[in-house]
Length: 47
Image (cartoon, rainbow, N blue to C red; front, side, top):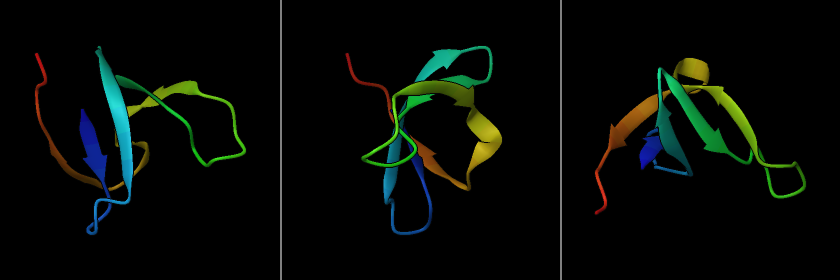
């Protein structure tokens, strides 16, 4: 999981090669985007 913005207001799922899956907002479809599209706040691994 990758987290964005200082208040961690957005989460994406890292899929490798500098890309993530996320929904830009509640009304937008899920899409693949570059990880550096938003301000990075942190990441964690879930197994």
